[in-house]
Length: 444
Image 1: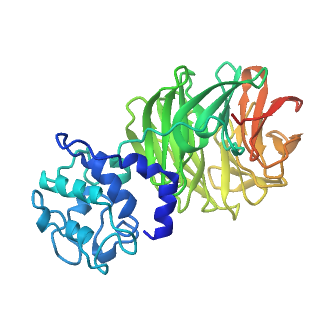
Image 2 (image 1 turned 90 degrees about the horizontal axis):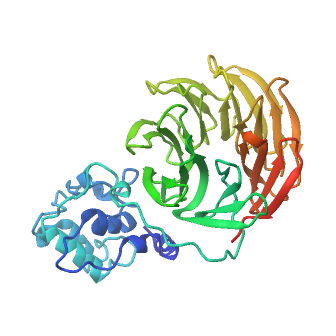
Image 3 (image 1 turned 180 degrees about the vertical axis):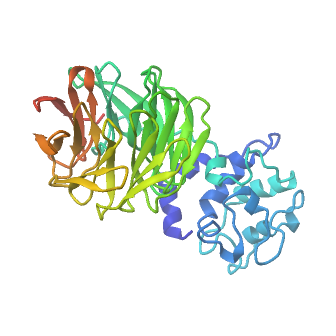
């Protein structure tokens, strides 16, 4: 890792919170808590799956203990002096010393690694082949600032189950606002740096929050909505989680990630049920059919794909956009899909044969597709929120007034209200007929 990237990560402070001060000598050194964070920050960039300098990888424990091209033992348990990895970290020869083209590790970090090897180089995780990013315990994030200096783009908004509150993604938090008077009610913290999607469980008790730090980490945090307590962290990846959706009539979640994968997770056991890896770029959005049997995903690879839940089989791939796809939804009968993206159009196509049924210009990039009763809502980059009628295949309503890109939308069907969020941090609460109820900036 070069000096610029190293300093950038230090500035963010994420890894500094993981590589904490040395535990007392009487405590057992933990690979997952003490050692893996060091390797993840300083070594994986040059010794991972995509790039393995010297034929040596360090991105999993099983790879860490394998010899590289030098054929020297990297980790000799209980013998630091015979461990090639430690020699490379401590040598005075800059042509050999690791990390390459960077400052050496601190004396404290080197001693930690040396003591861990001397103690037997034990692995304390559950899977030696898991990426270090998943071996490292989920972080306890620092509290957000009391007051924001800038507005936060609202890539995620939602209603509380009873519709009385509006939830908005913030910086390491979700801010909760009273829908009646736009007053800040509370702040749900200990969340990833940026929030990209919020899904409420069918029973209204749990929030699933897709979040992460771009290019670094991603996850979905399961949060008790009443207490704000984090009950679990699922779908961890090496890049941000961009969308999350509860499967109808099930405890399962589908998670769309920028690491090109889709993970189906049991929200109760927090176990991964299935991983789908058919996309070649970020998976930007995901949606279930009403019966929960099918899943549709959008991707930056210019496609939208439909999968069978039970088998994981891809049924069809729609390539009609010719540009990044950002939002998808099934029709109620699950026979068709509506998708939007950076081509400034809404596409309607058949699941059976990927044949396009309709194509409608929407005036800007579409960011989401949220289905209502007989219509879908589409937030657009041209500062409008659109209501598209499924019966006529026409734009039935334009919600105007935002002064920046409209990035997110949610609906509370019980009282026919809609909330939209914009790039400039503005929340707008509407009636379904397009009348504005209230607007404010979601900025503590």
